[in-house]
Image (cartoon, rainbow, N blue to C red):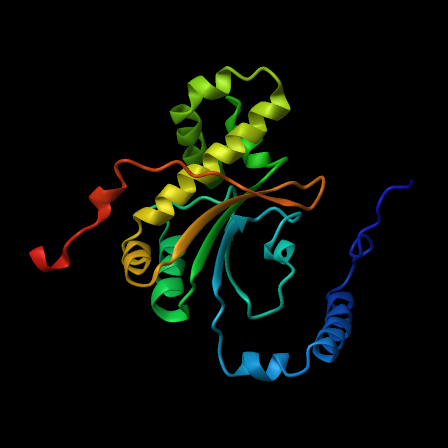
Length: 219
């Protein structure tokens, strides 16, 4: 079997992308009558997807249409308390969009994970961002160092990172409020780039999570 040829392998101009968009819009609209009219009236997606910016994985792994998933992506599917972009998305997903499920999705063959497993310094803002992953590695260093196979170690790191980012989501004030008031659920998934399949990550209970249940009336 020859190497797979991607649709954009010969991309040279923006006009090529616009031509592809016209075909996609027509086919999608024909197969889903009323979709665009409904989306023009607003959005009410039940799912917030927090994933990696890697081109090989997106919310489309859920087999969804435009309007079904609210999306936030970055390098390493990181949920940082200092990232106002991500924190704002969490607030919007809870207060405005009304998502019922939040998914944190990592993936195999993640370059960020691979770099964070080394002492290689990439420099610039990316190095600052990858510190989030290095801190996860530090927390699970004993477990990771016990794994000799590089691929298995990286895959374990991916899962540990998903667990930690799920914890970070659950620490968000708006998420905690809506978990209690309307049963919002937070899930962890890992996407296998070699099969296209998603696996559910078992998230251990966080014994210290309750300290983030704050009483605003006490201020």
